[in-house]
Image (cartoon, rainbow, N blue to C red; front, side, top):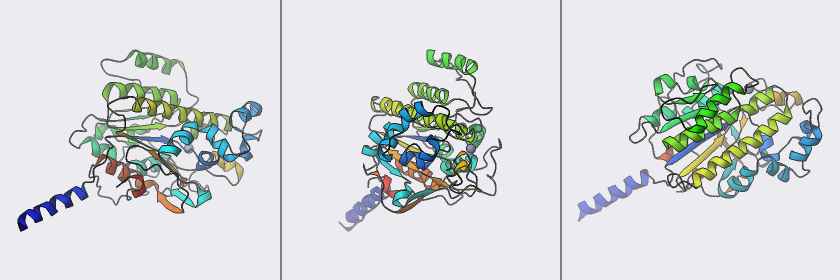
Length: 362
Ligand SMILES: [Zn+2]
């Protein structure tokens, strides 16, 4: 009898440790350098009415200007505020002393993406945006080696440095980024057209393509290969901001919101993914506000460059909406949260950030 009780206790303890989650698939999604200020208050009054940054004021005001900041944020990112705010959680609104920050002190892209994807900052080695293969193992690479995940991890990015951040060579994870075409046997009709258009519709930038390509390549791949862990990195917001084009920055944020909505609706209409999939959406770094022109830039000389946000929606996440409690969260918590959702025992030789407990129902 005593043995039976001990055995029972052992089972209960084991179950307690391996908490079951409903999530079987995770999409990590990033919007490069998209400010928490626009996410939480919509178009910035100091910028949207400024001729220096907006060349179509009347048109832009019609699209995105409303006196009330709550209405303003809703017209800018309708999916975030109609669906994620009702069914998921949003972190990082400083108006409520709710903060999400980078732990890296670089406040630009590679260090931010390294921190998101590995769960730790590495300022001594990851301190430029150069195309250097990441010496660190990302969560993506770790998961790709777990039983049942081989070939079920994929990444898509607008920026051509992602194959290096994810270390495509070593990790074996397919990364379609920069101006890469869809490759391999059995291309869909859409992929064939995307490959053609990508050559015919030039991007304004050298190393970053337009996000519509990244989005549709990702969608086509997901439909065909049914991956369980997907990373999609949209890039336009950062590049339009650097260029000082506030109109294009806002329109891009709006389009990205729509991309994510379409992806979510597809996921929720597909038996393989429906009610088993979590989206975790965040950004690599913040941007400035003061002096005004620093909205265009970031890096550790720019105040606010380390201020970020994250949002989540999925079957394990209690619907708490916008988190209005004071709190401090970090970029290095994303990897552990995703690992916990997928029930994979992610560890690393480095100390990784803790999962965000509030994101996962016990
Ligand atoms: Zn940038």
